[in-house]
Amino acid sequence: MEDPVSGKEWASPVEISSGLVHPVYLNRSPPCNVTCPAGENVQGWLDWVRAENYQEAWRTIMRDNPLPAVHGRVCYHPCENACNRKHLDAPVSIHAVERFLGDLAIQSGWSVAPGPPTGKKILVIGSGPCGLSVAFHLRLLGHGVCVHEAADQLGGMMRYGIPEYRLPRNVLDAEIDRIARMGVEFKTGAKVDQLDDFVKEHRFDAVFLAIGANLSKRVDIPADDARRIVDALKLLADPQSNAGLCVGRRVVIYGGGNTAMDAARTALRMGASESLIIYRRDVKHMPAHLAELEEAQAEGVKVHWLRTIKKLEGGQIEVEAMRLDAKGKPQPTGETEIIPADAVVLALGQQTHSDFLKDIPGLKIVGDGAIEVDEQMMTGYPGIFAGGDMIPENKTVTTAVGHGKKAARCLDGWLGGKSYVAPPKHAIAKFGEIKMNWFPTFPRGVEPTLDLAARQASFAETTGGLERGAAHEEARRCFSCGNCFACDTCYDVCPDQAIVKQGSTRRYEIDMNYCSRCGLCAQECPCAAIAMIQDAAGR
View 1 (cartoon, rainbow, N blue to C red):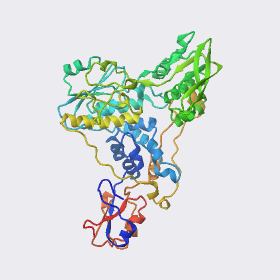
View 2 (view 1 turned 120 degrees about the vertical axis):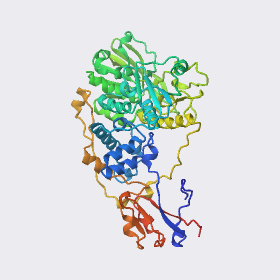
View 3 (view 1 turned 90 degrees about the horizontal axis):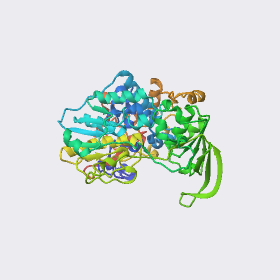
View 4 (view 1 turned 180 degrees about the vertical axis):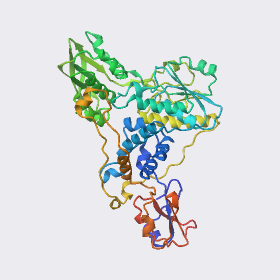
């Protein structure tokens, strides 16, 4: 088996027994790191939490993601789905530890310094997760950044599309303020219409487009009173001042995505006694994350699957039953029913506003207002880059933050007349290589939650964070897949006393003057961080 970074072959049992190999410490890729859309070194910062160096853990996150307190709340944590620990008891609660670090940083006033100034200045349009991420990473690289936001407040869809019970606005504001303190210039209520002229007038060296998917898709539903049909994004933007939008007590939400789930839960908090989701396909085909559905149902939201709305009239909606064909597409059955409804909330997906870009040569607009970019995240117009909701990929906060990081590095390379080349990736540490019998089982940390009545009655945050001790214990559950975590196993089992501790670095070296190449250290390493490789001379 070849290590993709070193290019060296890992040894077979025959080679070990014949003494043709020697042990080496590896730096392999844990599944959590590989699956993180923001490219975080998850295992790296968990290791610092395990060592109780919380500020270094936070700074490790900040190399990749400037919004850990936000992500600890709203990310759908694919890292946990990939966590090897799930095969033993339960995955590490990575999002909860990240939230703990993000909140601790806000409480402690930790900050990040910008890089040495380069004299370059970049225009960023949009202050959502992608815009904030690219601005942060460009400042780390020393570039000047001016962010223009058309709305009155910063944060993009994190502010206007995620309910406050999931993301308190003071948390979002604190993380944005940290980026501002790095020297990023923010301008709100500053819509850019004529991009080419604007760039030339203000002498920007490059542009990054980070406009969120803030336009709702529409569908024509016949209604006797159009005021009873409400846009989900308008409902979510500021629900506490929009109480008049949901007239009456029976609210129907049309759609099956995460926005539909948020709108349904928000309607209950606005005073609705019934909140019903109508979706034209079944649960297996819904775009919403399963956790979102489960939380909504726990709060009293009901769902009617395989239904479509035909019309709204006289406080009632007519719905038609659907069936799925062999390709999973919904087809009408002709069977209808009447359901009481005082209002219908449309949550049928969003698209990006990109009309102001249609006259820029080289820019190719594809479906839902997204823009085509190359591998360097640059559009067809030199110097204009794009990411987040503006390109045809998953529309999540974490994906957008990852785009911002990559784009900053690509943009930096372009300004220097070169292309950004990502570092090579290590082999992934798989579950079957971990020594399960080495690790004790102990329960996953549980975040406190509001009781059901309290959740339905206000927009207070539904989930609390871990305390310091609980966060430390949760980090201790990490297997450190494929990377040494200084457990001393190799040191203890080596019959030749060839393992040398490296003091404060918490690492080891192998003294080959004493090593008999028996392979015992590699066989016993609990996290598969040692391999036997062929000797350099190929003996």
